[in-house]
Image 1 (tube, helix red, strand yellow):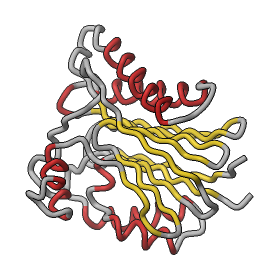
Image 2: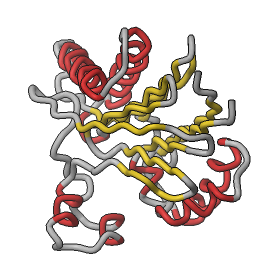
Image 3: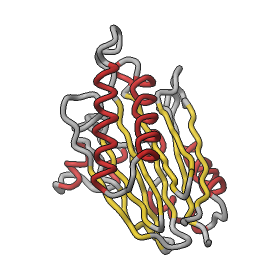
Image 4: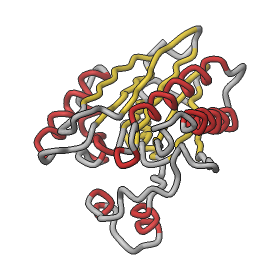
Length: 241
């Protein structure tokens, strides 16, 4: 049984409403963590993100077994539920990004759609980061812009994949875990203001997930402009048995 500790934080930032939704918990040796970021320009993003986060959280716990295909299936089911919610008058345009992590028996599985990210640190170093489904990230992969440009590019809010469209194409990953490994799930309102190297540096100074998030928030608060986006983070530590 994998021993986990975790800490979650969400803030509406400089916006009137918080359209992020986060869920986390452990039960019967399985840990499940989900973050969803409702699209602010599509009305009722908070409804879409809550539907997605609830679907992922419940679905990952109810799944008989875990693998990458299971995780993709949870995102597809979350998309179906968001599409169903769009049938209610006033909710026709709601959309959301989402990322989910499930941990059991020394293995981790994850999947995402959009630009809410999962970072996986192993041996104190960044071992994996989900790829944003955005125009900006495609420009980076194509060599048009540098990695640091990803944080400031004008197209970073132009998303190629989200929940709330007829087709849903999640990406997934997995890892065999070791004590000391750590995960961070977060919305773009968080990662845009805390860089990968800083996440790693703060992780190495932290004994608990709460301490790690607190150190990163100290960086975040110094950089956010007035009216900044909602921001959310879930930190997960793999502990010694």
